[in-house]
Image (cartoon, rainbow, N blue to C red; front, top):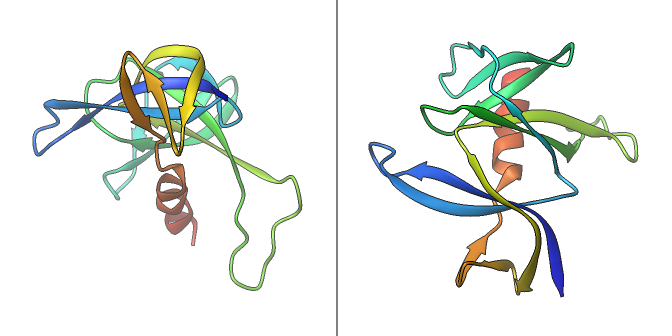
Length: 135
């Protein structure tokens, strides 16, 4: 079985010096755009930017980014306020560098890229970061 999407490289480690590969499904990763000016918010890991006339929350994963990955995630309802079906939330990820796009062999919860098993990026955690700032 094949999974379609992006392979991205993220900086990890205490000084962001070690690269880690992650997979983002094509159903979530909508596009890769040059990184515009991102205004920081007090949280330190969240900012905002303007992409195609729309203000987007930006989750900063690391320094030195030259691109943003615009993602659409299913919107989670807050306690007592269910989301409408098919409702999505758009956010941008900064600090991840797109390495490859296309169809990748799926191996359980991972995909295979260049002989390595690559886990999916935990976008629910990113979404929780954005949602926590909106409450």
